[in-house]
Length: 168
Image (cartoon, rainbow, N blue to C red; front, side, top):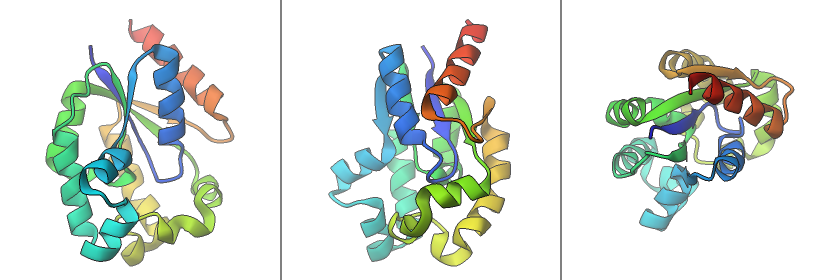
């Protein structure tokens, strides 16, 4: 059974929605940030600060490739669209849902903690620069785009479930 991957910008709600969606479906939930912290003993922010964005991308790719995504809800970091091998695996093993929110909502949701989150490319491009760069990638990789503007988690989950039932 194909899994589900939630992609989108940091702060869009991938982890929170993913956890709730997995619970409602009775599936396992995999948060790549948590996997990396468990395997490496350091958070995204610590890895980015100590070893840089390239190392963080390498680790995201490495650990994503090691996962069995069947029957799982997978929540990777927003930069997962960059490592080619990881995205190929994700596209083969899961249905990809892009959780799209306007930049203003993302900025409000992560606010002043953006610098502390270990967001790949943040130091170089800023949040808005990353948003403009990644939106096209998220849309290109997505099987479904969920417009999350002004929606709470339960409303987003309803939209995902409706699409899943329609595909059954």
